[in-house]
Image (cartoon, rainbow, N blue to C red):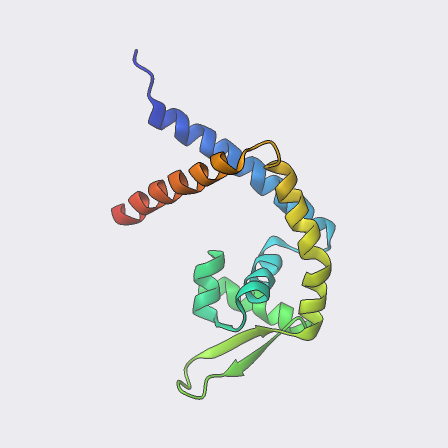
Length: 144
C-alpha cells in the first residue's frame, strides 16, 4: 500500500500539538494560573485594549466562557472593562498595571520554555513550519 503522507503529517501534527499543549499547560500552572486566564492576559499584554469579541477570536475561547474568565480576572485586579464611546454595545477590556506587572514577571519564563522546545530547529525550518501550517490552516478555513 502506498504511503499516505497527508495522513502521516496529520498524525504527527496532532501528536506534536498535544505535547506542546501539555508543556505549556504545565508551565502556566507552575505560575498559579489556568491556561484560559493566561491566554487572555497574554493577548491584552501584547495587543493592548480589545473588545471581548476580539479577545475571543484571538484566544479561541467562545464568548460565553470568556465572560466568566474575564470576570474572574477583573475581580483579581488584573484587567478592567471600559465602555466604548462610539458604540454603547461594545466593551473594551484592558490589562491593569497589576496584570502588566504579573505578565512582565511570568511571560519571559513562559517564552523561554517554548524556545527550549524549538532550540534544535533551525530558523529556516521554523519559517518553513510557519508557512506550511498557515497553508494548511487557510485550506481548512476555506472548507468551513
